[in-house]
Image (tube, rainbow, N blue to C red; front, side):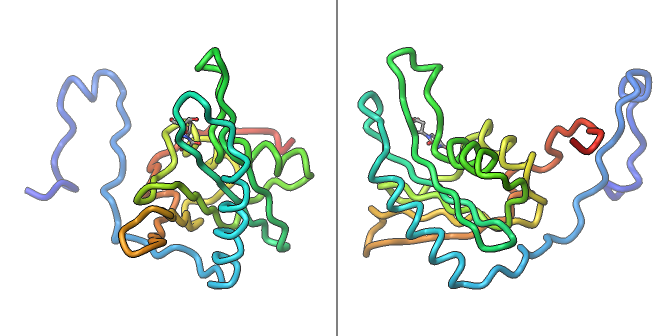
Length: 169
Ligand code: THU
């Protein structure tokens, strides 16, 4: 029996669980010019140099592109009270909002290892301002043979992001 036709279990029906639709064929990320992605990686690399990470010593830079070509960058900023630390991606989002933009077109994250994907909280925060098909470029400056990168869709990093309806504000 295919996943599509499998009936919901009694328990799930009783709890009113809404079954997620079966995954469709993987969508491609939206076409963002390579030059834009390269610029994002350059800006994220620059921001990473300003990371404040004396505790983890793990430096991260992130950059976001908006539709009209603006770029916002951020680095991780740690704190003695560890929970008060902020990741590079969320820092970049905060810069974007303070700069007056609200729509992310592409994301780059740069680390000093083999490349890393955004943490769960950052995925959720990015999803607040980005569609599922927004490309997320992950570059590791310490990858064997030099810089290595991969690109994934935000929707693949965070399927079924939590969303509340807004009144458009
Ligand atoms: N970090 C980021 O900046 N982005 C992530 O997506 C994951 C983790 C930071 C937080 C902390 O300063 C350090 O990396 C180690 O967790």
